[in-house]
Length: 124
Image (cartoon, rainbow, N blue to C red; front, top):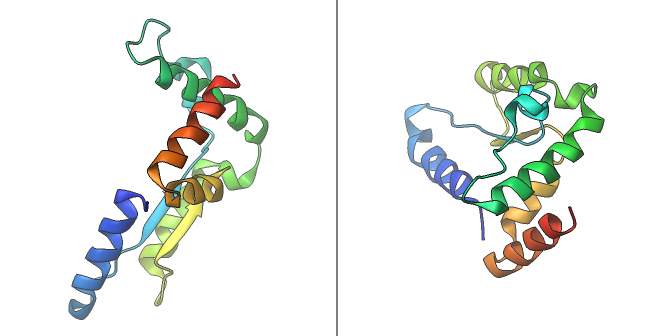
């Protein structure tokens, strides 16, 4: 099942193209920010334990990429600037570590997405 933002952007892009308006989707994943530090941690008493498990899983995978230029906030900003300034921008850009994997996961049927996420979170 496609991700809702992607479906909405594709529909909007097609609708407004005849008016010369460009719509670009930037799919961001692991971007090195304060969220990858303990400052952005999800509280242990959160009523949604899945959120805590997913946050721990994502943070553990983002830390090794802390110095990776693809995961820098600057890279995200560069993609935004490129999408605004390019005469023929791509419809979608991906930024950050794991963006492609998250995009592929989002295209899977919902039941399979749920099983994959349960396994990822349970493995923590």
